[in-house]
Image (cartoon, rainbow, N blue to C red):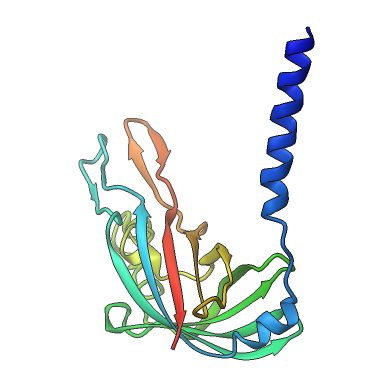
Length: 199
């Protein structure tokens, strides 16, 4: 029994230590001030994988391994909150989103593609009401990527030695799904990883 209690104590002590090491705080006002300006970014998608509907034989292309470069421009800050725009290249018909985000006291950065500044039309012009199931195809890769609502999260801001961070991306509004047999099967949302470096 004494051995068991000692073992539990060691486990708890070491886990508390590991958690404590990650709790270093920063001045998020100062960090946010360093955000202003231009950043180069790269997004590497890891989902969804390609699928084929057993009901229709329709193939849904894969996002896995596709890379998109972008530019993030932070144009205004207010304490720990920042705003700006994210611009993609010709592969998106030059889609530009307004973004809003924040840095917390631990340096974790989250920002979201809020609305179109320039709608490349890939998603919004996709649906033809005269084509059966065309609306659902609009949600699939790559068309479904160009919706509003992409979330960049789990990135920890650093300025040592460079202004940069990396994190995760997901598009929860992608609406992926296929008919499989007599049922509708949800396909994992568009997601991946990103990295950003100050120009």
